[in-house]
Length: 231
Image 1 (cartoon, rainbow, N blue to C red):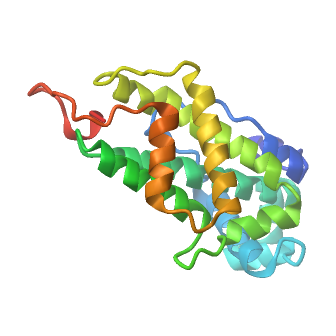
Image 2: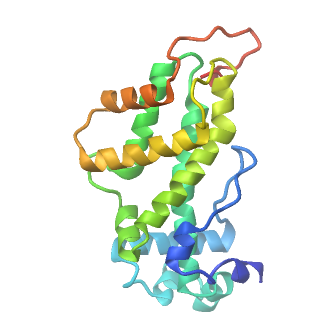
């Protein structure tokens, strides 16, 4: 019954703004698994294809190949399913940062920054520059602003708690209020790209580099250092 208590008690706006505890490690996943995960994935697919209002609990159950009663058991009501989908959207963004971090090459600051900007663009826009379906879902629910705040906070938490420390092992951090500056960067990039969609990746890289005062020189590593952990 814990899942019923977890989901279904918040409105979509409350769910979009809900603050989750900071993750203890980059290996921690917050994806739903098992039957709840199947139901949430089915709902997400239908919300993005047909819209939230047009998607019924019966349709979600049919898409997930489960009974309607099982949807209610795990999520309480449709709002509970919506909350699970919003949680999944946040995890998309945080996991993209984690995947980027794991792929970094020691000493390749320019390459890491370039891939970071690519990850940022991919999270919001497709190859043609059109907003991803997540944006339509958030706007239909009227929760985009609240979601942006939550997603920014959880992404900044991940960067501050687990990735900045890796950078600090080889470079001096030359800014104060590191977590807050990550929030400024994330919010600022989202707003800037909305205002100026044609801005180049090179200009976005320069903005991040200058704002965070990044040291773009290659650090000196000892033989014990591992490749991904040095930037």
